[in-house]
Length: 191
Image (cartoon, rainbow, N blue to C red; front, side, top):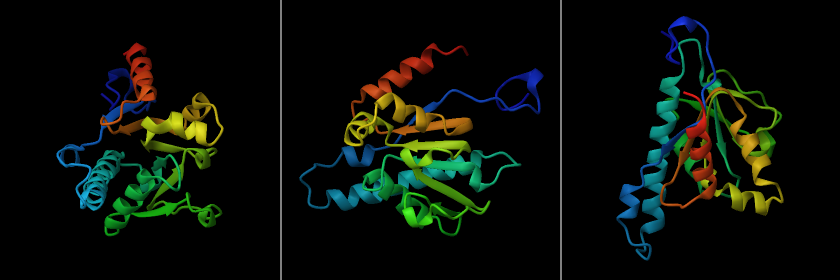
């Protein structure tokens, strides 16, 4: 049986619907927002949680896959999700290298197979990954408004970058209609 659970498809890889996973914010939710240490505690906790999620995705890569097969998407350059991803990857320097395509100066470079790639939703057009990890999807409506883009177009760009597996990591502390909609759509897909 292959990892898609299809006994007759051994050796054949099929794409899967997006998987929505929750980011563990328990430690942060215990804190009071007016605590002067809140921003630094939030950054440390979220960077550690992002590291954990990225490591899980690297470990889930198949035997024939390399770190370049993991594409990480963030809403934009000036977002906390981008800062947490870069912080997480910087903390993982002994485990994996990365190419930051969010930085425009890096866009003309080609990633080595030993590198994870990081892009914004917009800058990921034309880039694909066997496995895609999306952060910040719960903010796609405000991002679409800010960039004067239709939310369905921006969502399509982000969700269609994967060849086989798409993981959407969401913060449940945000009430997001875009995540609710995505969950409903996924729930209606045939199993």
